[in-house]
Structures are given as C-alpha cells and as structure tokens.
Image (cartoon, rainbow, N blue to C red; front, side, top):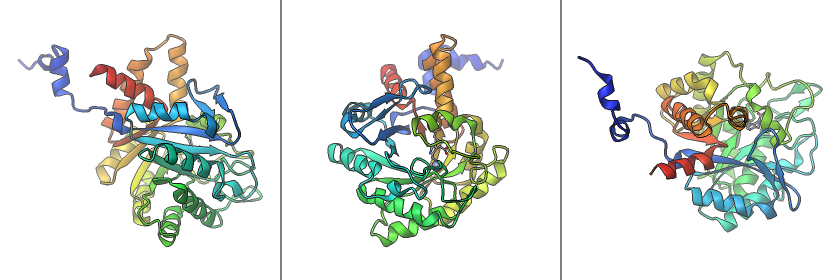
Length: 322
Ligand code: PBG
Ligand code: ZN
C-alpha cells in the first residue's frame, strides 16, 4: 500500500526528505537611515523596525553582522526634499554618508543601495514630474547619477526600484563610464503597484502627494507582462532580477525561475510584514511558524534571495534549530 506517511514519522526522517531549506545567507535586511542626530524612531505600522540616524546605527549593524545573513538594503531619508531630488545624487547626501560609515565600520558587509527618487522628491513620486505626469526619459539621467554616487560611496550592489523604462541600461552605462564596471545591478524588474507598500511609505516618508504609482509600477493582474519586464532588464544588463511583492506573487516567482537563470530575488514587503506582526501581537497566529512558512513558500516558488524585515528573527530561529 502506498503510504506517504512513512517519510513523516519523526523529525529526523522529515528533515532528511525536506525539499526546500532556508539558509541565513538567503536573507537581506532593509534599513532606514534618516538625516539628523540621535534618531531611533519606531515605525508605528512596522513593529520592530526603526529609522536610525548614522550616530545610532551601531547596534543594528552589529546585529546584522552577527546574524550571518547576506547583507543589508539601505534606504536614506533626507532632511531636504525638492522637485529634482537633489539629495539623491549629492555625494554628501544621507545615503552616501551612511554607506561610507557602514563600509568604514564593516568593510565585509554587503551593502545594497536602493535607487529611486521617491524618498528625495517633494512630491513623493519616483521620477521627475510635469504637472501630474511622471516623466520617464527625463528621470533616467538622475537615476544614473544617483547610482554612480552611491556606488562611489561604497555600495556593493545597485538596486533600481523606480520602474522607469530603460533605467537599467542608463545606470549600466553610467557605472561603466565612471570606472564602476564591477558594480552589479539588482533590478526590481517585476515591481507591481501594490497596496502592500503602504507601511514602507511611513517608514521612508515617501508617499506620493498626488495620484498613485500605477503609470509606472505594474498592474497586479499581469503575469505575462512581468516576464517581458524581466527579459528586458536582463537585455539591458541586469545581473539579478526581482519580483516584488512576494507572497501574493508566488506564481510570478515560479514563472521567472522557470524562464530565466539569473539569481532571482523576492522582496517580502512591508505590508506582508505588518500583517504578520499585527496578527501575532493579537495572539491570533504563531509568529515564528507563520514567518518560516512564508519564507519557505517564497523559496519553494523559486527565489534564491529574500529581502525581508523578518531577516534577523528568521536567522535567529534557524540558529536555534541547529
Ligand atoms: C521605492 C521603494 C518602495 C519599496 C521599495 N523601494 C516603495 C514604493 O515603490 O512605493 C517598497 C518596500 C516595502 O514595501 O517594503 N520606490
Ligand atoms: Zn520610488
């Protein structure tokens, strides 16, 4: 008689036949660095997540280092915002300074820099605007300038999240022209216009002041188009591609895995984190079980790398299991 249960009899047997395993090096942890001093401000919609000023970063940096995860993804929150996102490509901007600080303290730490204008523009959109129109081609040179500035400050990987067409090519050639040919691009290739980003916009102070991001981020209904976006980014020179958000888009991850052989990144975004935290704080779910189940699902769907606010907890739980 066929008995699937034979291989489920005890933990040792189950562990041996497990198809998908999480590893600490699968994870990337996002951090928010704000301009100013003595800042450690909790993000209300994301329990456990804070905005830090550079002078208060040490604690979280040593935690990241000790956790043995792969690295961090940095988002800067400038004091000054304007129409042209000037602070985004200022060599002395908050993100550039934070990267230099992190690399001076932890030269081995992998630092991934998000490239997008929305934290730096007064209107909160990811590109230049004309009236209420978000301009594509006018935005590309600024993204390229920002990428070069962040890479010069020491970023190991450049991660464009703006969803302007042609930005990977523009960034690649700017990096190459500036002696940064060895800096890889992790492209947010299939980034959907999603309700799951709203806690992040509190954390990064980047909510658009008018309209929404639906003219540049993807329609959540479009799976085939996601594959075209990914193929195009690979053509333009992306070294790694991303699907974002993760949990409501596991089918996209699977399709991307089956169609492309580049390292595939999934971004388990802010709203996905907040929902788990809220339910856990109410005692409605077992946080550890749910988080590990979610992360396994993302990996089983095909992701190689997972950007997640749960990274430090998950690394700790994996350590305890050993
Ligand atoms: C910037 C950016 C966003 C996220 C990552 N980079 C927000 C947005 O597009 O509005 C979302 C991350 C998250 O929700 O955790 N463009
Ligand atoms: Zn943006």
